[in-house]
Image 1 (cartoon, one colour):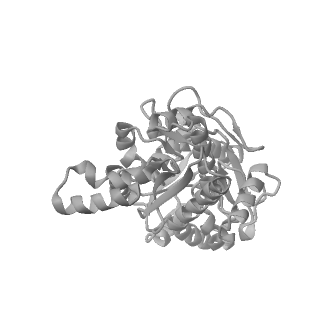
Image 2: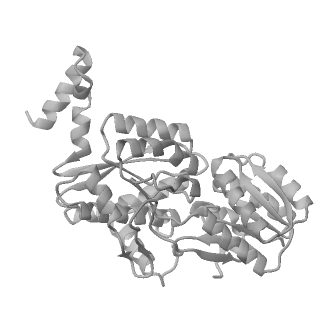
Image 3: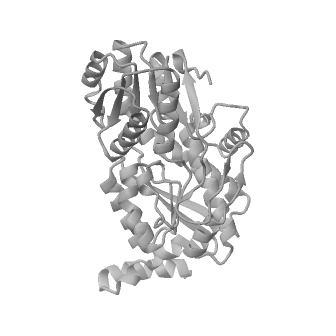
Length: 388
């Protein structure tokens, strides 16, 4: 009988005989880190308002790991993933991660999606010392000197909103309305937008809460349009954003709309094809459709070579997942063969210049660890056509 089969059998017996807790998790612990494999946990929306974005994120990560596994893994270890759906619900994120950590079935975490979702697991991450790469959030509130085990790829939403508001002001637009998602993410971005607008004394046309499920999108569009704003800032995301923008464009076709990097996820852009004229979006990664971008060409080559869904080859969410995968791979390389969580943490922290040609990642000497400060502004015309 192999050691693995022995441990599995021992765990089954423990469930009946009442052996100590450690016996119940022995097999799972062996699965998390072995001489031949390492398992990463991922609680992410695979259903719900950001479900498609999560699916594409996972596809990008899996492509990155499939490529390195085909070349022999990292220090002889194959990288495995255990994605679990949380539906963009913070309580489910906490439940998923708690179960993975308590069962010792994962060694590290990657790509938690959402502000409240990441906030829910941060205390556990730090208490247990679990290296975590690439939370999909730009919330400034989550980035503190105490977050020693979390490695953010994105710049902050505060930086994004400053760039966005500057653009609005430079265009001479006045009476700015803000539509925000009615959850911790939207409320935090609302604060950032409000401060940026107040700092330059821009006249406001109100603040409007959009339900996470988007059900009040049409009613909200009527209210915002009635105020005749000069422009609308969007602290929104997912299918809810689509519901509002579609309804608002039917009421006010010429009013500029401007959102942050997560406002329009890749899978929603085709649904907004008739509503993208006058839309400006911050981007924190190169355009996933651009063949001029070195990092995009590398990403697309990996997706094609590993048999990823062709529909995701131009996905910004998949690109972000792929980049998070590359950061984890580099951290594992730096950590060495005698892997521990602390060595992985140190290996990630030691990344100073991970270059992909026109995009690079590097962490400073101390927390909070933020890999990129790149911010782009994309302007769209009709039919989702990007002008810049």
